[in-house]
Image (cartoon, rainbow, N blue to C red; front, side, top):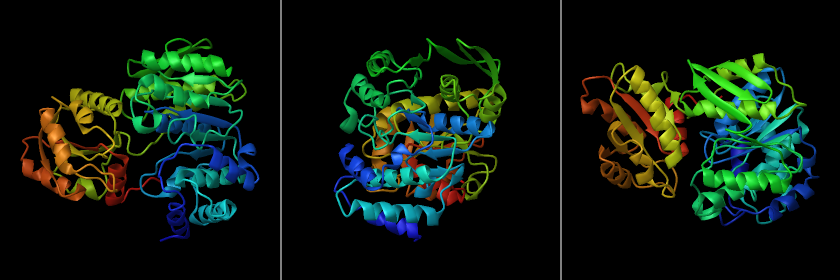
Length: 434
């Protein structure tokens, strides 16, 4: 276990609850650390239910293509905690992370604080002490009371599509959840709003007005769509004919459009069209319709099979993945086999219903962690959706058993349902995020 991992293990015991949304504990700690949140590079703050990570990935690639230095904070990680913190483009070193965590731990003096709060404080400390032109700051959960919501005047705030998720913390309705996401809006900072269901849009638009933030809304102030294999973006500044994003799936058209809209909403932060084009073609985001064409797992499948990985874990995420798979099917038809594992807090029935009529077979597994849903429940949910399914004794067993299906055509295998399962897959494949 590395030095940073040892400190992280200790910090996980400082609060009895994994999630306890509040800003009071963090503000106390930040004050003890000399308020690093006031010494950060300019911040773009990103909230939403789906598409946050992909939007951040596009923003990072575009801004870096313009020759600028970019800090990035995302969560959760897939294989190692260090992935959450990028300093000027590079994943934080173990030595730097351990030192920041230990300093934060001393400043906290054993007071009660959640793991996400204290690790966010350490990240802010690192971001404040290392030079960069911008910090891309992704919300952990919600927005209003999230530990990242300590930035007084961001360059811009962004809300990606809002859907039903984390109802135990954010509310049972789309309007309630949107209200929590809108808590990141700040006076004088543009509020970029991706395409939303009407119930969420009404709340977000009203919240932006109340906060004194100028709203840039998809379908109103800006538009993005695919046409002829290109991304066509338009706003009041004009029209851009751009290459299709490297990240696969039609939903990435809108995520990329949100990133472009964000950069165009910040007049002082000029990013050229050529940098936007380069960023679209360079952006990477692991476990989002990622083709695992190399590595150990693909070698265990039948000859000619495809292996894909996506960490989508709610109904909206499943819908986007199902559309992406349908797009593949139009190009190269193959039987679809799912290896699905989910947490107990997510609806397996809602998730797998999106694959009804698409998936040929499901192997149900239990992802790592105490909150994982039993594989038998995955099988039951798949059967309810009319999909043939069976339990597997973990990811590797499921991969090995694809050969037993004796399909006449090499299948398209998709590992999905949980970021924890996605992390396990990347580790087993020996291709962790770099």
